[in-house]
Length: 441
Image: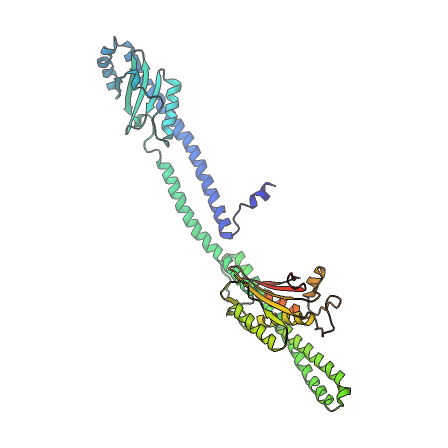
């Protein structure tokens, strides 16, 4: 459960996770070294040096106690303190500070201040802000006094150097490791970019590089891409060949029927026309999304052209204009996308009385929507409806000439080839089927 909760706060990208993997050990090592050094150097060594100074302070305080009076203390004690390189000054009670005076980051100062408070009789406070000196404020038998001595006698000089070196070399090693890590992750990003482009129908040149495992994955991707392309090419050639070869006998049948009485030939001619329409749909399905190359296209202009052609063909279709639809261009295969939208419009006007087309473009997605007022498709059969050669007779009106079940399949293939999906739903405006082509930008 802990790791499931932690996943929500982990970076999503490979760079972020790799950086986290790199930085965590460095930071942990620096923290461990800092804590150990602080305990062994700042506390241990400072305690030893403080104990040495405490013995000297006891000698000075002993001289203060042996002085005859407060006036005589100055001459007698100065001699003793001078030999120990310390300076003693008598004070009045008002001169004693209420608390220790030191900088917020003075760690060693806090260590020996606690040591003085625990072991030095009469300790009142310490002032560590006077350059390199330590000023102790004490209450002796002769009244308040201050003792000044060099701080280097009680704590190591430049104690921050280890921290500076640790942080500096940690940053340097992190930068070096980041450069190396970036070079190792670059082939993975390039492989992901090429795979994403192939999923959207674009063939980008790619040569495996990087570590052995990345090269193996790259070679596997190239083999997979070649097999998929060969399969698509074989399917296209097979269906195109079969459809093309069937056109010749259909043409002969049409010529033969033209010599028969019109009343007798009408049903047969209708069958020939249906077969011709089926062959055209087979060819469209065979071409799929492989026709043309991606180019920057304004989807609003493209939809306007498709709707205009449908209106000229006598279809009751309307291009809806919506505020905030977004402007810009999207890399699309013009011929393939026109075929997908035209198929959706054909299905809409075949099974309904009218259709409406709209487009919405945002920073992340392109959405092309076709709605009709027909009977729609039940929710539990929408996935089945997008499969090739599927005809949902109970759900759709066949009196107006049903197809062969390839319209939605072609639109689905074209949407997938652009890195998108075809979503079927219920139209809130018209009550029929709503078909959305959603493509990520």
